[in-house]
Length: 275
Image 1 (tube, rainbow, N blue to C red):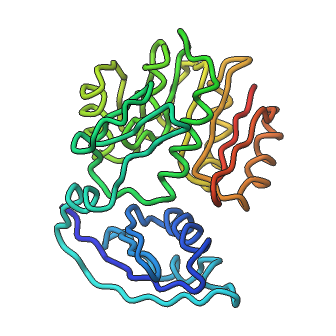
Image 2 (tube, one colour):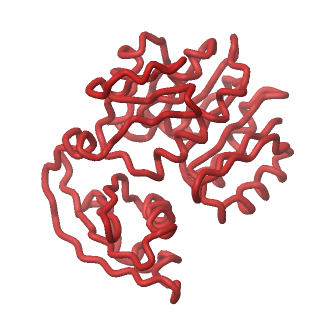
């Protein structure tokens, strides 16, 4: 198991900058967060941490925000325990419940039961909420679906529950692949799950591509997504803060994608595009 560094960030004012700081930290390799009264706890594997990446964050250069931090090494963190202490069920529009097995059934029309292997930050909740909210109005019946950066595969699972045909889930992290296999079985759906990135995508085309990742990866990978998206197909994106939208749409316009629907929740945004 990799050793982690725990960073304790104090943020003034707290809102909305705690969410935005998490988004920037994800871009430089931080993968887990816990919200505190005065800031956030953020975790990164010790062997991938680079001090210069942290110092170059835009938010740390903003004179209107006061951010300080300390850090310490935390070997062998039990991420399941950390997650259970901080995760609460997600209720999307009183239509979809995303919960763990230890949560009570919310008796909503749709239910997804997951057990992640890492901590869940509020920002992830907001982007998951936006993706599911968009998916409620989409037609998945018989469609081929790709969930890129699948994480827990909650989106792929919901696509299958909505009638999707062949559904592929891909993530760069081994824990995500293992967790996705467990979650697919837990929800009685069949997914094709593998470890990789957009570079591993072949010639297979899809009707719908779901990508809840982050700005930098999306900007890099959107051209690849478009190349395997069927004509008339849909690309659903999130993992974006409101200030990322212009950069993302610039890439999408260059790839001849048309924006069909934009949703925002707190500082987070989801974009539905069509080829």
